[in-house]
Length: 246
Length: 113
Image (cartoon, rainbow over all chains, first blue to last red; front, side, top):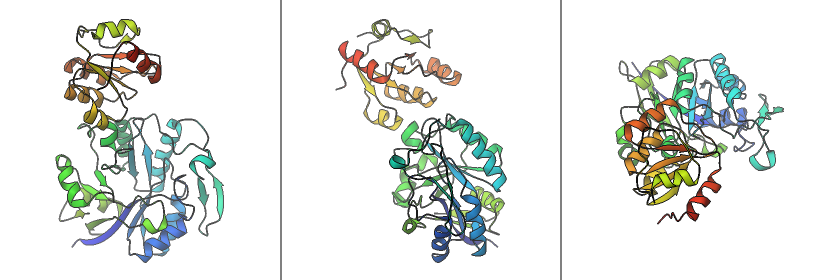
């Protein structure tokens, strides 16, 4: 019998230059636990370097962490890649790093990219231009994510800048997204009307939090048998009574 | 103004040689956000962009644009060119950046009303 799990699958940690420094794995997990989130994904821009610490901390609170990242395509559309395990996520990160636009992060302009440990101590700074784009097309990215057994979600499709519809006018029909993310910016009832033509693809919603107080401002409810990546995949497909609600 | 005159004047490289360039260009529009092009470009306009995704052809076709100029030597992939032929949307490229292209088009008398 499926039960409900509350998921926030798009949270930025202090590794993302645009996120606040208080978004440490510890800070994120404590906030998520306090508001009853069962599943979370830290999806930093083009990197997964704070995911392992988040996972270890979250485990102690009974929260399931899905390894993921938010990749910037060559068209500057943001795509979330969620993975079964850290190993797959690191493989995706390797592909992203190989194709990320060259250059070093300018901390004064874009913000710091901090890798931290379980007790908020700084382990190092990522020097890459994580705010930049890759030279991988959306089509190629989705193919790579799914090729590693991952789930590909188009980020904030209601957002003009960095949303796939804003950048590309419409969602190319040959791209088989596993889900489309509706942001907190639009009423969900409006989104259902506005994006009616894409209703054959499951909709999810997440916070896209860059500050602690924004975690959980929008979530997705997964009705499934257990809190596992496999079950989430089945819930997105609506198999055997499993489903997602946002 | 005919598209052929623009191609000659700016020495554009033609990526869809099979398509007729004897078509009227009524104005120009510049944007890399395709949703913006859908919203604000007008029929008969030439569109200047750096986007090379297949969707540019669909957008140009939807809006009845005269053609697409890709800047900075951006090269469209095979799928995009194939679709451009099917939809009768000429695609040209230039080594010049957008600013230069648009300046020259403006000097030729093209406007965005």
